[in-house]
Length: 106
Image (cartoon, rainbow, N blue to C red):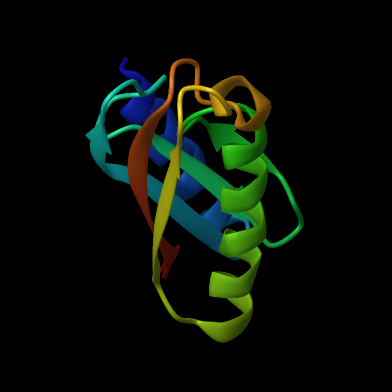
C-alpha cells in the first residue's frame, strides 16, 4: 500500500467516525523539497495527523492552516519558500519552495 493510500484510508476511517478532516496536498515544488508533488497529510479537527508534506516548521504551519480551513470551510493554497541560508531553520533541507493545497474533506 502506498503512502497516499495510507493517508486516504485513514481519512476515510476518521470521516466514518464523524471527525472533521482537512487534507493537505503538495501541488508544486521548486528546488529542493523533502516530499514530492502528490504527498499528502490529513489533519482532524481534534488535532490528529497522518502523512507528511514536508517536515519541520512547514508541517506545523500547514496544521494551523488546516484548522482555519476546517473552521471557515474554505480551501487554501499555501506557499512556502526559503533561501538556502535559512533552509534548516524552517525545515526545508536545502532551500527550495513548495505549494500546498489544503481542503476540507466532506
